[in-house]
Length: 100
Image (tube, rainbow, N blue to C red; front, side, top):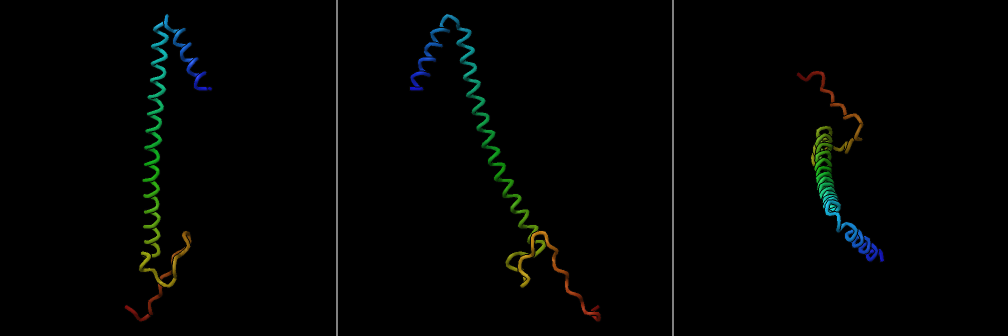
């Protein structure tokens, strides 16, 4: 029933404005503006979603690269295993005193 009521309101509004073409033109412009605004907002939301995906991928790659710099690539890590994300890297082994 809401669709029928909406149709009745619309037809009554058109009948009331038949003698006032400026009011009809204003109504048409307002409806067009609302449609345009909805389209623009949809495009902005779509672009924001794509940008967020790109930023997430960039941050993920950056974190992986930083981890690999600190710990070495995953296929070349030693028996120490993964270090904690914020922990200190292991100290280098000391050289023998007689080494040049």
